Image (cartoon, rainbow, N blue to C red; front, side, top):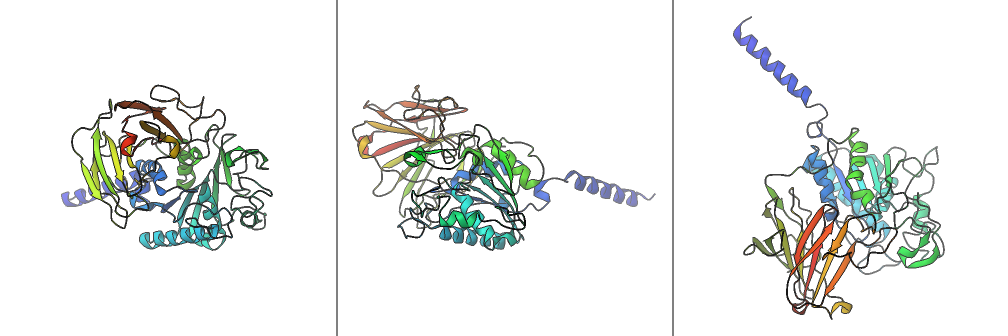
Length: 440
């Protein structure tokens, strides 16, 4: 055999082997775009660890979209306009517009929709009323699919299972009388008894003596694959690594290779200071032992009308302090764990000092946006003690506030399971508030 032909066949064989080795690689199989939809009053920022987990399994970054829906809080009465809040129909229309953008940007024929809490309402409404043609899969984590309550209390609420919105949403579809649109694959993820919005009484909606008529399995839907995640809470069934494993399996048709997050060598961060024009941000590297700053600001910017505060080139092994200033708000100091990967979903909201806290020298709040603190379930502490304000029973509180009477600044340690964040007790007398925000 001539040498040139032998070399050509060797090259071709190598290429075929390489192609065979790519089988099952999401980055090379044109995986569908995934659109993540947040819940009531939340932002797209809650999804960045989930996006990172998809990326760590080879899903292309340019096919992962977490949307920020305008006015994410639901109205008290869905039929009555309320400033700063959206109706169910408005939320659905906003989601439809975002899906259309994703389809145009990617050229894909269909998308996958993944939602939490109120996001499930918008997704189901969109799919049922015209969106099914461009949706292949739907995953609903902690979906309030049969309402948070049913009855005479707040009869016009989007969350009333016997109200007009929920009644229409759950009316039978297809020959099997399903609660899902038959042409789309649906999966629900729910807790056993730990979802604060699937409880027999209304204590988590301020009505402790009211029977909700909402069973623990209310997030399940007839016609969906209904998955139970025991012990997880209302948010964790969407954002926890165990939830990710189920989402990936259902969407990809195969198990995820990993549920941890693979670090990147070069990390670029961005996001918005939501709702504020002319806000400013400063970023400092801090000591993981003391929370003290290691030098001058490594990034500073006055935010424009678009709200974007970056880009910022971060170190993946460094803890940062973010300082946000906005007129009419406290100087807000946010401490976070190191960022393992790049993201443009790192959003911030400045805070105001509560009247009840003005007698303190410093106020430090530890927060968990992607889940709740479970007394007896989670290992957690704030300044070496059990975090204040965490009730026993069903996890339903995502923030714990510590008020200090000491005038001198010092280090304060916040711990939640595997995460440890050290902050500084900035003085309230200078109109400053401090937050330790956990990723998990």
